[in-house]
Length: 347
Image (cartoon, rainbow, N blue to C red; front, side, top):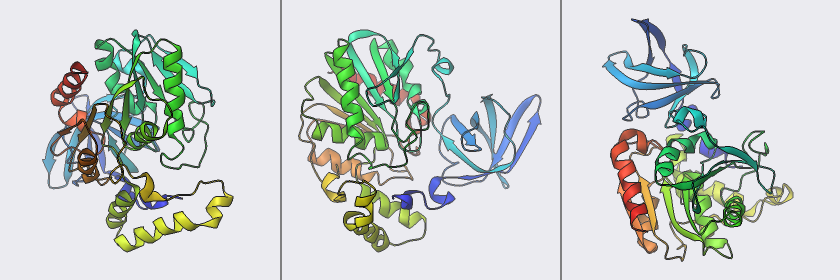
């Protein structure tokens, strides 16, 4: 339905691992020199549909490309291959981040959530982005653990089994906000009096739709967004441009989504894309919100974050210069964590 968002390897940020070699018992990989590999900081390198994963740091830039030092490998060592990409994960399981006490619970809709217990009255609910998993959220667990929060990271229905339901139908937040609603209900039933929502990329849209559509958000005291997608039309236009298509083509896709009878038969709701834009329509809540973003995002139209701040109350913005999509913490961990601590401290 929304395949325009992922039309080509270029749009997905995919590239080839050009070489892998050993130097003094340390593995180095050669990646092409492009906007994505120029992103700063220690990052995760994935390949083979996320079956391969290592943590890398830039070592040197040579005419043939950018050499990265492999700091940690989860499974097999990297090999020259197509279909690799950089991400901000830095690990896959709670144990990779020093978290050993946690539960995996089944939610009302059959999806799985990861739960760590702190203060039963103060909770953070993490919502990952599209085409990722709970692993995207884990790098922030140690920070909120140090601040005493209970934490829950939820799965999407489109996540593969066993965490998700393996569904193939996404409405990009129009219905997925109900996942947040059930997570908040769970937190309330287990003692929560204050909840912070933390949305990554599409997770930001999902959290925003929850704030806008849920009947009772009184327990939610704040929201934090990392590289949020707030407007589908503008993101489609950006992705179309990266794939060599025009804004007009993206707009025609939007119109098709809104009018397609076939989509109705497939069970999709009426999609009036601009009506659920969070860059064009206020959430109409006065809870404090923190938006973490980079103008070098490369995947979504991040200027929508600035529009979001203009039309909503109590929005704090923090830019991360040069960072790529959902790799803000990787680019400047001190600024990232201090921004969150300072924000939480004023609630």
